[in-house]
Image 1 (cartoon, helix red, strand yellow):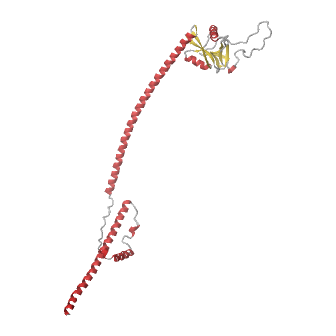
Image 2 (cartoon, rainbow, N blue to C red; image 1 turned 120 degrees about the vertical axis):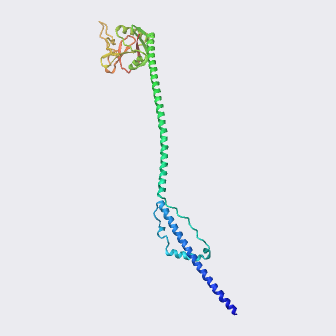
Image 3 (tube, rainbow, N blue to C red; image 1 turned 90 degrees about the vertical axis):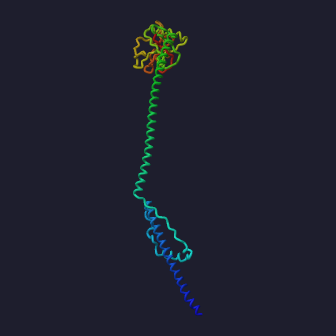
Length: 323
């Protein structure tokens, strides 16, 4: 019995001391765990601050109370008590270190890199501009050559046209003298195409001649015989190169010379001793009678008389060619 009391006196203090040591260890572990959590919060706040400075953002509301309020601490303590021994075995995981802020050297390096990129792009633009300038010079040279070739071609075409006009005039002159009436140094050729007076003059000029311009009565009578023989038994008015377009009553040839004689149509006169003649026939009045409305002269093919007509009337015409 005495031995049992002795054993109890030795073991009970040991058990009490072990229990007290366990509680002290728990308190020490809680202190270490709380310090780690506090350090983690400070790290997170520092990382957020650096990130906001790097991005140029204003400070968030989370930085106003980085250490937490007393209510947060009480909540944290309550959660620690409720988790029990399972949380005691969990070890805190240290977080990565916050990213450093950009230094002035980093900024200068970044700007120099961007400038180098811009310089390279500018160089490429200069190269392309030089290539475009070269291409423009080549195109300009080619365009100048094309213009010179076109000018040479135009000159050649004009020369060919002039040669053709000369040949046509020569051909018309030869045809007029071979097929028409040759009289002295002139040849007359009748054309059976209906043309206005100006158009008839243009066609005669293109063939190397002009509308007929009888210089005297001998040429007038010869031309009358030629037209009568060519158009008989019909009577057709034929354009001559005579007009008074410049001034009423002032009759000129196409070459600008004044007409020295006239062969105007006159109404027939009654025979001497005959009775009074009737009024002139309305279709054969004395000429000229058109005033300013009829300024061009045509010759009748039956008797060779002159009639004034509207210059736009389309008639036969007779051309005159030098021989």
